[in-house]
Image (cartoon, rainbow, N blue to C red; front, top):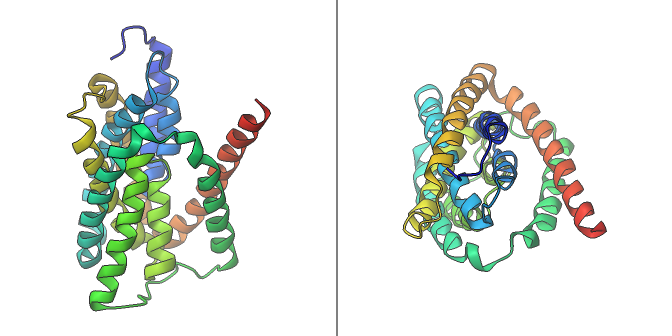
Length: 261
């Protein structure tokens, strides 16, 4: 724990972790709440914030993965190859994370999220039912390719990974929103683990801070996963649209503020 962190900052981090865990468990994108909160800690570097965010997030994704697995029984023939590929991609992205300025990604993420938002609203039946587009090896290789690409992004920067996983599983592979969220949590756990494999030996994880945020993230993830399972794909779709809309506003504000500064 940084020595000059005060009680109010710790409280805000705990609240951010709780909210991030819930959002991540339902639709993904919790990192866009948790990572900026960590960047407010006095004296923390961007790479330390990114690494510590991974520690907090993996505690939440492990909880939501187990909850979804027990209650939804996600398709492991998709989750396994996608998770393994994503783990490798995340490790590669983490190796590059300290070399690429994060601010370059914000406008790109914003454009992608706007596209996702419009695409989801324009297709009201999207993700209502599972209708897989392919079977067999083509399905598994497509899942693995999506895993590598999104895992690479997660290792490089991270926020929004769960959201991108859900929309890829729904729009590309053809899953309904609820099973897509279940698979996304397994894959997101793998990407967090892959990034930590690189970050931990480099000594950039702030363990006290990460465990504190992670405990709150874990609680939020448990509540979010149980709520999503209870309410089904229709609830997850609505939550997805709301969360993506909020993320667009937040990132848009960041981009405008950067241009004006």
